[in-house]
Amino acid sequence: MSPGGGPGPREGVRREFGEGVLGRATAVVYWYLIVEVMLVVAVLPGALVSLFLARTPGNAVLFALCLVPVGPAVSAALFALRDRTKAEGLTPASSFWRGYRLNWADALKVWVPGLVAGVVILLGLANVGAGGVPGWYAGALVVIGAGLLLWMVNALVIVSFFGFRTRDTARLAAHFLGARPLVTLGSLSLLVLAAGIVLLTTEAVFGLLAAIWLALVLRNARPLLSDVEERFTSAG
Image 1: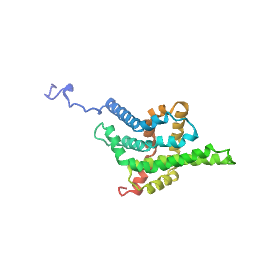
Image 2 (image 1 turned 180 degrees about the vertical axis):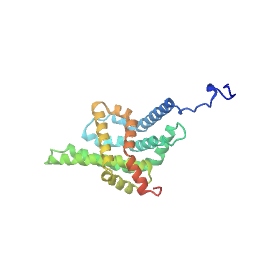
Image 3 (image 1 turned 135 degrees about the horizontal axis):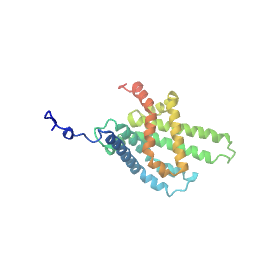
Image 4 (image 1 turned 45 degrees about the vertical axis):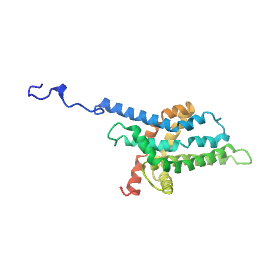
């Protein structure tokens, strides 16, 4: 007891887990770890099948089919990562599956067409130099492919937090490529980083870092999300 009869230092109000600096840091690590596990589980079927495919242009369609689950999983992970600051407890798995349930259909509506376009571009690159296709065509396809990837990043970010019609999502994703050049440049840098990790290591290594990479994508997209909310929703 303290001299005044109140509780002493050891008898004060008990802190809840996560209130201290160490607790908050532990909670963040736990949240990211569980989101990473959920992400891996969601894409695992396609990833396992892709291990048996040779890395050749002829298998581009099969690789694209293996990548179909990635779109909804990425959307769910983005939803869960943003939900960390609003959740009342340590519930990353619940946040992930809630995001998956809410967004899987909208995510597929932008992700699958992006994959189809990506296959067409890849097959076009594979045929450069054959059949009289000019060399400059390869450069044009690379630029188009980069623009497609940037559009897909924007589209997945938008569908993860807003319920627009697919055509409106597509338009907004394209609009913000020019309207928010710093966000676009940041996304391009993150895509280059992802490609570098894959080239220097393996797809599996990048997969294990995917939650951190997506957190960077989400942080980079904050101005875009703010613009969408303020200008294109009733809440804004």
